[in-house]
Amino acid sequence: MGMSGARRLERMLQNLRGILAIELLCACQGIDLLAPLKTGTISTQAYDAVRAESPKLVEDRPLASEINAVSKLIATETFSTLLR
Image (cartoon, rainbow, N blue to C red; front, side, top):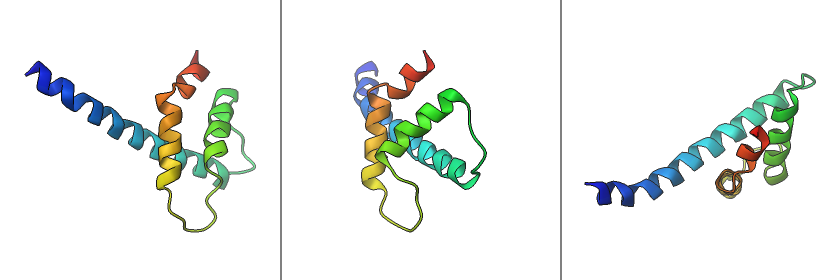
């Protein structure tokens, strides 16, 4: 059963990255809506990293490419580096 679990693990990790990317995009949108309130230093760095890939949402648009871009940031440990 270990081999079948190992084969499914990559797909599960991709799904998790997608979910976290969507959560980060939603969090950044929430930060934008609460302006002029500010976040902490590390949160601001994470916000800037996400906003470099995805501008503020002001009208409906497809977000698939932006979700993928933020997922790649997660995969390359951009956010993990901020926490160290």
